Image 1 (cartoon, rainbow, N blue to C red):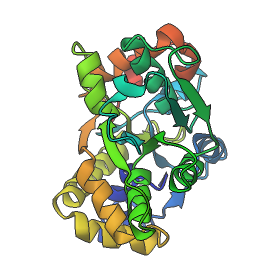
Image 2 (tube, rainbow, N blue to C red):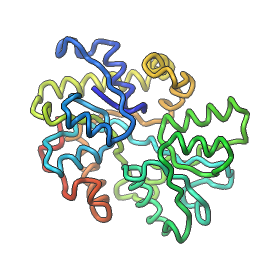
Image 3 (cartoon, one colour):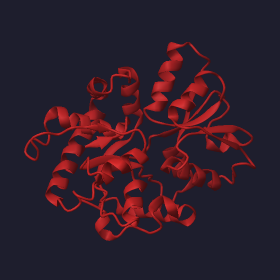
Amino acid sequence: MAGPAAVVSFPLLHMIESGALKDQAERVEFRLWQNPDQLRVLLAKDEIDFSAAPVNLPALMAGRGQPVKLLNVSVWGIIWLVSRDPSVKSFADLTGKELVLPFQRDLPAVLVDELLRSHGLQAGRDLTLRPVRDGQDAQALLLAGRADHALLVEPGVSLLLWRNQQQKGAPLFRVQSLESAWKQAFAQQPELPQAGLMTSARMAGETELSRAVVSAYADSARWCSAFPDNCAELVHRHLPYLPVAAIADSIRVTRLESRTASQTRQQLEALYRLIAERHPQSIGGAMPAAGFYGP
């Protein structure tokens, strides 16, 4: 199994430590990936069987003819606007300001583009988008006082606020989650599926195994939500560069709720249709077929 250093992967680590899949596999391992391009390479080389992923990635791969499946959606809000300006209360207050934006070609950038459009804001006209390589670069700019507003993904937000507190820097504010802003802007489709589990092409036909993985993941997700401090200590053992306090905060502010992809097909298709209007390349140019929604 694989995933990024984010809340969506934390249940996978608990599954490994708790032996949740002992009846399905002799050995279960976790591979950390840093960006979606790296995940695509791991999948192409058949080096992993299941992975946490942003929901557009398996759709993109399916659109390009690879028979992968999305198994569940478990994360519904991990993207936050962070600011040094206490007068900024929402995305709508970014007029005339500069927003540091990592992940240029990934799902968060697409979602922000749609959200800004809903407020009548256009990058380059109403605000400036400052692209950076990744979330670490965005954090560094904020900590150094060289930027005032940024979009970050958990646990990057909690890690940034923890570091800023350790350095006794000028106040930083967790302003608004993209999920909250989305509900206000798109009342007809208020839920925003962001990440879940996907299969490799090789494992897409292993329905019983996929069901076992999804069931175990749901149990571990509930455990992480119920016991954020214990989950944070477990995650820290696997990812020691993340402080326990920041991990626990990231779990508390994240809506970690596992539902199968077939159960959330309506919400997923609403998001895919919205993306397809202006960013069709992000989902491979076509809506996924019915068999895409697992397990």
